[in-house]
Length: 308
Image (cartoon, helix red, strand yellow):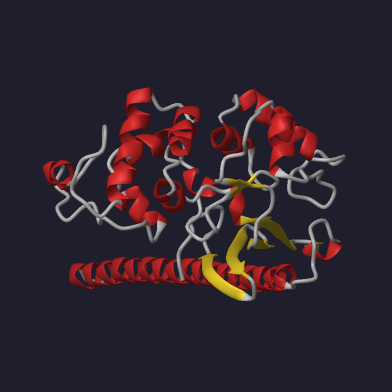
């Protein structure tokens, strides 16, 4: 007959055994979960690398000087992979440095109003951009010089020179209000064009701001330029032959202002590669045979340009 002491020891051993089995089970489950996570990480990294390679391939195709819009080479679709390259001219965007230096800051003001800023906000932001670029410390009408930035806890601003990056533009007093109204404002600006706004390349908002016409008029003309496929910046686009012709189509008469053109020479290639849920976007801006800027993105389902 077993003694009470022996029974107690057997019971304790059984409890310890159960605990060891439970702990080993938790270790095995944890190891399996870690393996699953590690496998997913490796798969994600492989997909992201593949997306980058596809974007590089599209960029190589789009960068070839003989390739034109609408050519089949600019797009490829596989089962779970694809790439495409989009060709535009950066003169379809607004160069704030050139406009302000040329005394055409009203174009900026019109654009800010089109995006929903109140007149006092638009005037203030335009003035602050002028004060950022000019070399003096004199405050423009509704502008912002060093005292205004110091009061908001940002000493050392403005830089009193032309913008060198979009990150600098974000620091201008009043830009937070613009970002709230138009988070994608960067898509309408450039720092690398020759300064003139090419009406064949401009989206409706830029076309309206550059010429002073109503947005509805610019939208109508932009639709007419889209050609049969209904999409701008493709191979079948209709094009203005001259600035006077473009202004006439927009209902503007008189001498053409010097900040307008119809075509540009600063080429933008936007290449996107996709693999599964991941995508990579590469942007290269060229003038002649020289690349003047390159942007790269390696984040799934998001788009944030990073200067490289």
